[in-house]
Image (cartoon, rainbow, N blue to C red; front, side, top):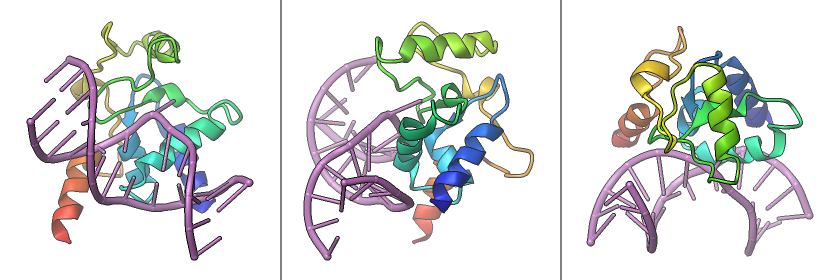
Length: 119
DNA sequence: CCTATGACAGACA
DNA sequence: GTGTCTGCCATAG
């Protein structure tokens, strides 16, 4: 429950016009390996708690939802925030990935790799 | 305790 | 680019 609340907090902290990856959200919430829990939280609470769920994308810089299964809506919501999303759902990290002022290197991927290599 | 659930991530073919 | 496989893990039941 604790983790879940933190995940929601992180997602709510993503500013308009920016996106974060599932793993990035998990890392900022305290567990870089819990990307799947972020998915679970979104399923359970995105509507209920009105989370800016559309600002969460996958590590490949793409919308994970399938066409006809939310893809179009997420793309539309992002475009409304002037986030450029290609027709196939790709978003440029260099330009739109959220980089929290505090957390240096929110590059969840690099962070995960670094931490994994330590063990 | 055990199993299922996930919009994942990364490595690979 | 696609698809498959493995590892991952906090919750719910």
